[in-house]
Length: 196
Image (tube, rainbow, N blue to C red; front, side, top):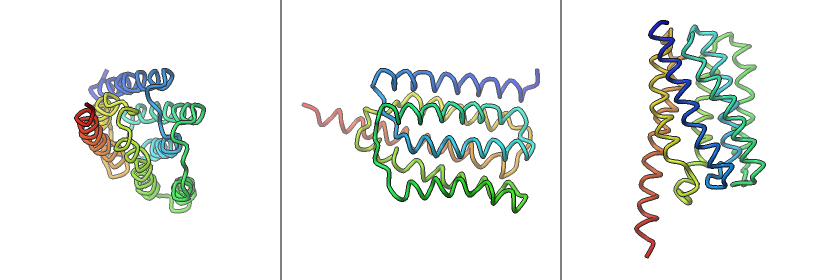
C-alpha cells in the first residue's frame, strides 16, 4: 500500500466518522440540515470528483465521491424532515449554475472551469447554512465540521496529481469548515451566555 492510498483510506474513514453522527443526529431530530444547501453541495461534489478524476487525482478523489453520495442522502433527509425549508430565487440560481458547469466543461474540454464554477457555487451553498448556524447554532453539529476540516487535509495529501483542478475544491471546503467551526463556537458561546 502506498502512502497516497493510506491517506485516501484515512480520508474515507474520516468521511464516514464525520457523517455518521451527523446523520444519526438528523434521525434523532437534533440536527436539521438546510436541504437545498446539501443538494447543491452534493451536485458540486460529484462534478468536482469527475473533474479531479479526469485531471489525474487518483486515489485522492475517492473520498470526494463518497462524500458526494452521502451529501445527497443528507439533502434527502433534510427535505423529508422539512428542516429549514426556505428556498430563495438565489438558491435556485446556484443550482442552475451548478448544472450549467457540466456543459461548460464539455464545451471547453477543460475541467478547470467546471471546478471553479462549482467551487464558487459550493461556497455560495454555505450561505443558508452559515445563516442558520448564527441564528440556531444548536441545530448544527460542530464535531462534523471539525472532523471534515481534518479530512480535507488528508484528501489533499492523498491526491496523486496537484493542480488547481485537484486542489481548489478540497482546500476551499476545508477553509469553509474552519469558518463554520468558528461561527458555531462563537454563536454557541453567545447562546449559552444569554441563558439565565
